[in-house]
Image 1: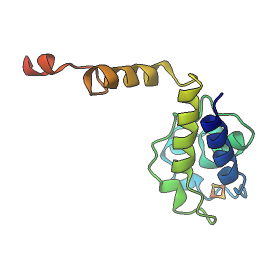
Image 2: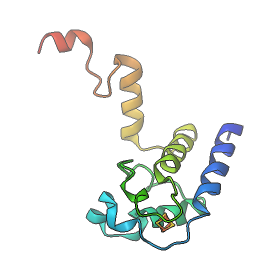
Image 3: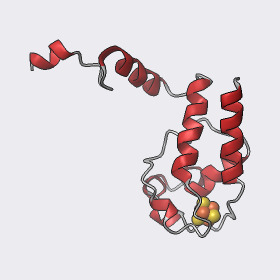
Image 4: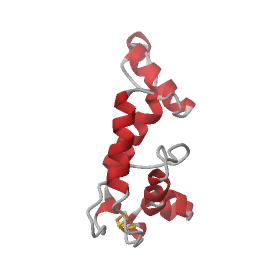
Length: 122
Ligand code: SF4
């Protein structure tokens, strides 16, 4: 673990511990509307992240900011999720699909891993 990941975790906690668990964010959240499980709601994510649980929840988010519209405390969950994703990437605990996407970006400049010469042949 690096100082950066420690700091990022502290920043995440500082934001999510302000959540008053009112649940007003849930009606606007696209992922919760589909999954219908508390762990996928912004409130559920805030509770889990406040307890140090990152895996399996932070990559299930569209970063749409819709959940922030109703939040009485204006908690910026999209910023929290981005910070939490960075922590998982640093700790190499991000999903395989994310690692593959990063490798594709490094190797080809796009998330699909399509090289320039392959694009020309299409
Ligand atoms: S609306 Fe804001 S304060 Fe209320 S549960 Fe959602 S994130 Fe927490």
